[in-house]
Length: 122
Image (tube, rainbow, N blue to C red; front, side, top):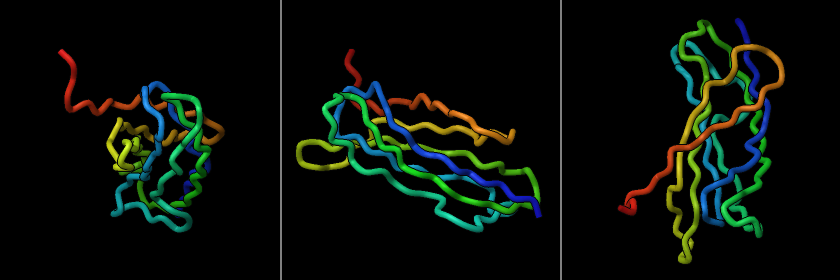
């Protein structure tokens, strides 16, 4: 059975205009054709408390192996970026997703998240 390995990291985020950012990530795939054989398919980073307002550095590892019986349901990475308000409540700042490249080798994915702004200014 073919195998696919996803090894990398969630490096960070920029342009959110807030501090206290953290990221929840998930590998989405078709469970009818794909089986995670090793590693975690979801996780979360630490809350970045750096002095870089609006930017975060996480360097959070991702290391998961799959076996598959079809290319249907090829894995994609889903990201949710959150921030903590002054009461330490988690509030969604943005979200996005990207397919895992099919070509072997080293790749850099840059996801431009959709901002979550329930009260846009006029």
